[in-house]
Length: 472
Image 1 (spheres, rainbow, N blue to C red):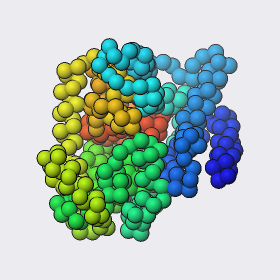
Image 2 (image 1 turned 60 degrees about the vertical axis):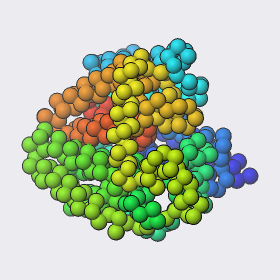
Image 3 (image 1 turned 90 degrees about the vertical axis):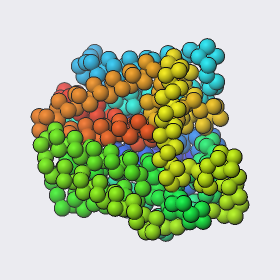
Image 4 (image 1 turned 45 degrees about the horizontal axis):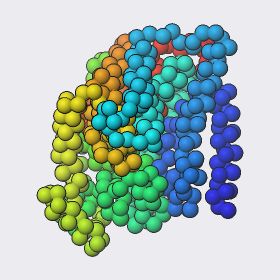
């Protein structure tokens, strides 16, 4: 009965949202900015309430449904107007080229390529690889005017600050056992198909192991239920804060809260990426304060890394988990808690090297579904993981990875060209893209729906100035 009621309420809310998006497609972007930040926590709670299987899968699909409605609305407008809402250019051609390669590798027989993914893995990979392309083209069709851009900037900054505040409270007030009892373990392991080996079978990166197998330091995971997902939102939020001119004291206070949240995720790569983004703002717009902010962030990150194990909330392995960890360490030749703490840094580089070797030795690719979280979820041998570029090289060949890089470099060039016209907001989005593309070297940024749907949509929207004759 509870599941049936949840489905009825969900259908009613989704129908209302879809109708609103059909009339004004840009609303989908706001729903993504807010909704995708809450998605994982909400789905875990629903799982804990007994809504599982196909019912929860249908609820999870809200983002794909709203994206499809936005695409259909833009397409209907173009059909009625008998022309595209934007003038196609080089960046669009490169985006289509990348999408075409992904589609080609979706239909090529896997046995010819050496892959082993099934139809489910291929569909998951299609969504994973093409979501940023679809979001980009919707954004291209919906240029953001100054007023809309100002509202969006405050929305992104407000969401980032709210996620940081919730995460700081949750980290100290909510235990790992609570998440384990209230749906997170079942959601990740049974609903999504992952096989995590962290404390209570939660994701390994929920905690940091400083070397003492009895003492684990908790990282901020917030509503993303992921320190990395949360940190990527914080990176974009900090750079967007640089574009907010009105109500400067409020924006600085929110940015400060986001920065503290970023430190507690203990994602050193994300801190470095945020500093890199601030340097881009400084160089493009000649803003010395951005260099100072980048330096302050780096210093804070280095200092916080030293004290983090002492100030972060503690967690621990259960006796049974500790036995399993020691057994795993013995089998792998590593240390207890393999995959946590400093070994995480080494594993990133080891995974990156292995992925590069795989792509170099097999440049034709293995087909979609053979890399990263998609292969892990569908229990297929993971040919490459961690790095966005090596995962794309494994799935769509070296040419597919190069096509993705070429598209995004061209997109970045277009944004920087606009930013040099003293467009502070465009510079902040360009800096965000630089930061995320840098993070993509050692992690799968496309696997974070907030980035795939929000960042690339906004980047597409800002590639050309808003035109009153187009949809907004």
